[in-house]
Length: 302
Image (cartoon, rainbow, N blue to C red; front, side, top):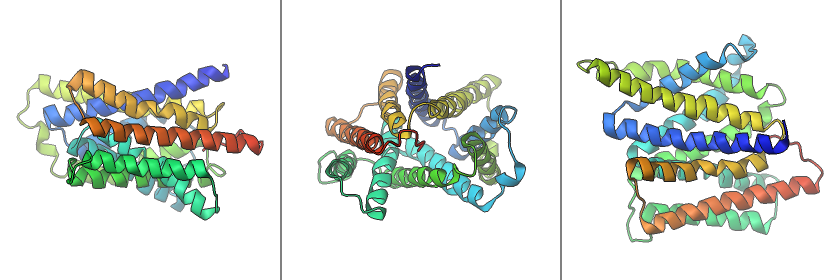
């Protein structure tokens, strides 16, 4: 399998994330589907799908490192991301979560005392884009403040996930880490998903139940199994910085698909803000790519 084919996997995987976000938005807005129930289904069903294919050491699942990674990385990022979709829309949720890359870049610049004008400019551009999205360049916040808060939390959780996974990859396989995260996340989210959510299906028709469960399974299959599976597979031949460039397809796909399928529109300046963030992601990814090539370290998997 040639390198460009792995790049295509990263492209498709990120696109599936964006499409699944639009489907989740439709579930929340049209069917008032419980967020915690979708979170549990996403983690639990993905665990069942991956379990036969991933060799897992069950002692590793409940190691302290994996538990922290699972709860504050995978579970928290998924929960806050879905909440942001529910409070706003798929476009805003995906763009805000992608602030994780500038957050990681800022952390590394401070920790390793990196002075790179491109990275500094990219970080400033990203946070300028966030301000524009939240305010639409008006004297007020046009996005629900709770959506801004959960969106930023999802970015910080994804940043933690990224930084923590780099530390753990020396001890654990990426697939077993992901599956362990799904299993631990399922266990932790289970009681929350059914407290207050069990009455959702009461009194609903059989057709209604089939429809919402079918849509929920699309979110699981497209956004988790295919999305994560293809993206992680791509990292076998391309670096994390290269994959991050293709990952910008997630917010782009979310914007396009939510506009076409749901008629979701952002304000004109919010598109500008989203563009700033996407440009920042590209600048950071390309800058990291050249830094690694310059040091001869092309095989780092982020």
